[in-house]
Image (cartoon, rainbow, N blue to C red; front, side, top):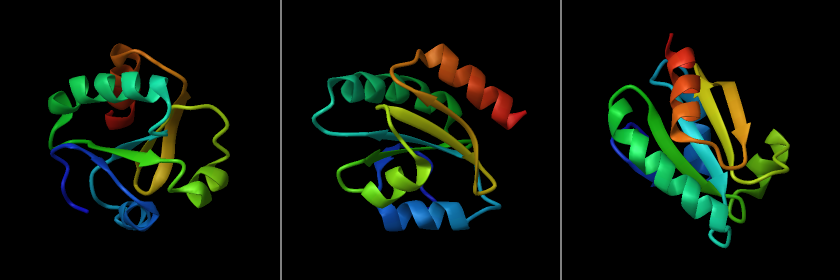
Length: 112
């Protein structure tokens, strides 16, 4: 899972691989569902900012219908849910539709 050049949909196994690569780049995961209209909006927002962070932050998407174990472990109750990870640990998280500026501010704080 070293492709940090696009917004990829990943499964639970790939998510585990990302977490286990603690020394690699930070990453963001949007937990959503294909049936969720707000998820489509959030996907567009993420795609709009991902290029600005290419090579520094990985951007991934998980469908909660396909990743129930992970969403249960994280206690996700509201979609879309955005989690930022650094060194294999949760650095920050947001719920619902948020602006690109808000996400960028949180990522910039995570990156230092």
